[in-house]
Amino acid sequence: MPVESAHPEIARKLLAFYDVHARTLPWRAPPGANAADPYRVWLSEVMLQQTTVAAVVPYYARFTERWPNVAALAGAQDADLMAAWAGLGYYARARNLLACARAVAKDHGGVFPDTEQGLRALPGVGAYTAAAVAAIAFGRRAVVVDANVERVVARLFAISTSLPAARPEIRARADSITPDARAGDFAQAMMDLGATVCTARNPACGICPLREHCDAFATADPAAFPAKAAKKAKPHRHGHGWWIERADGHVWLVRRPDKGLLGGMRALPSSAWEAEPDATPPVEADWTRAAVVTHVFTHFSLELAVHRAGVESDCNPPGSGEWWPLDRLDEAGLPTVFRRAADAALKEKSVNARD
Ligand code: SF4
Image (cartoon, rainbow, N blue to C red; front, top):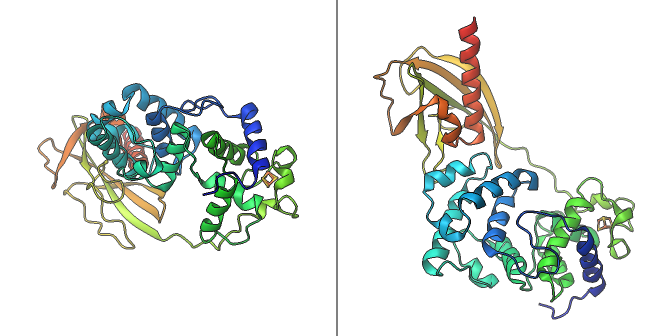
């Protein structure tokens, strides 16, 4: 690692930009603080993975109100945490969050390790999160490269290799411009520049503090960086979801297996998600096809056919599950695809009732 930034002017200008234009975000310390609450930095960084700031802000507020420190989070019930996370997506993050909080509480006396290496050893903490927490919470020099930083660095050095192959070069270049002092502010300044100035489609080079140092600016089309690899089409899958409703206002919900997609979340009973799933309902009833809900996951897109049926009060669907009161459906913490399926089933029911 370089002792001094190889490009001191870049760091100097970027930090000056940050001193004036830093975004005010609820988990942030002001510019120059050189430290922040590690719990809050870690929590926000985990939430922000693959998720926008606007989506994270209300979740972050609810989490920190309910679990104001790592010890409180470590004591949360799995089901409560999964329900609180519902709608934020990428649910493996929620399971890792809990595992990490418990490890910090049990093995580290409730205090986060203050080095990148120590943080990296925690469950679910990857290279990016460890670097971000080390730099932002503890002021350690660490090279923090998220998607915004990747874009800015690819442009500053006009890196022509496409992602993901360009990652080692981007990281080496990011290392070369990271200063020893104020590494946390530098990381957040790069993120802010990427989010507000050097945006994906329309970089605002005219107001960019790094214009003079930017190789992409010298080309006709800065937005062409990072180079784009040909996109692979996502596979398409189908599934069936079953809305089983009792006349006393309860619906049958199951909990998905801990491992796998949406693991540990409450859900409607559903078939496997594949090219031609088995459409056999879990109970015999007078089924109506209510709707088809589409949802795009990271690795595939899904068309979920939602079927609805009313059943008698002694109905006992197979497998483990629970009869959940319809008037408390909001508290079930259904992930987005099942929340949409529930909405579709309820809508179909009300239309049917009117007819
Ligand atoms: Fe991005 Fe333009 Fe600034 Fe270069 S000059 S870093 S392309 S905004």
